[in-house]
Amino acid sequence: MKILVIDDDVKICEVIKLYLEKEGFDVVMAHNGTDGINMFKQEMPDLVILDIMLPKKDGYEVCREIRKISNIPIIMLTAKGETFDKVLGLELGADDYIVKPFDPKELIARIKAVLRRTQGEVNDEKVVVYPNLTINLTTYEVKLEDKVIEMPPKEIELLYFLASHPNKVFTREQLLDHIWGYNFMGDTRTVDVHIKRIREKIEKDKYPWRIKTVWGVGYKFEI
Image 1: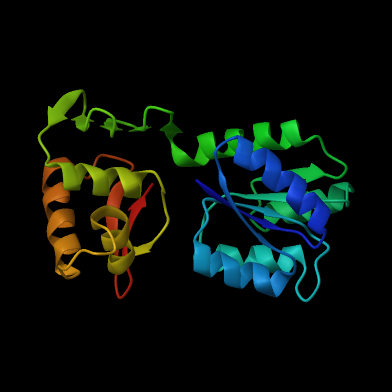
Image 2: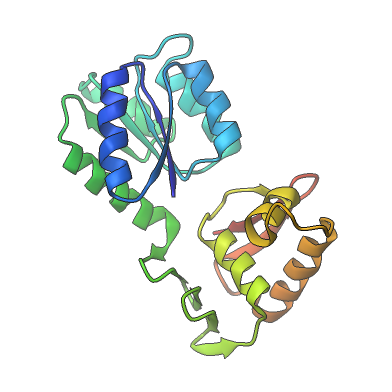
């Protein structure tokens, strides 16, 4: 999973990067608000660690901009510890709030807690669990209401990838690159065909999740 750190303190960024990479996360960094928003759109991270006191655009403005286009988790990381600042950050859409100076181990624990709340249950065996749906990429098995659903490998890989990034929109080109690889010679209709087949096998109106078409863009696993 990829984490974007937006903080103008380079040393703090490097410390966070060191601890996160030890936990197996990919880390990208930006040191001002404008670059942070651009980096977010370019990298599509799974979580953002966001400082409030930033050059060009402050963290509140960055949070607003991200929330216009994405529901991915945001953890505010700042020297401001007043209740008003915390409440404002949470009201703007932040998922958690940590005051500097901080213990990196606490930050890691909070990141994992936020991801558990927002990403469903994801473990080291590459299993994603949602109500009535289990996708196991280790065994290449999909269960709907405890019944195994027959799917070819690419359908399972595509479903697992989308379900591992809930509410995050991917273009057809991005899905082709992730699932079929950069050297794939087919076109984007391949994605449409696989999505159609997956929907026919698992989607019902009673479930709190679905694969949603975002017209003009691509697809997302919506919860």
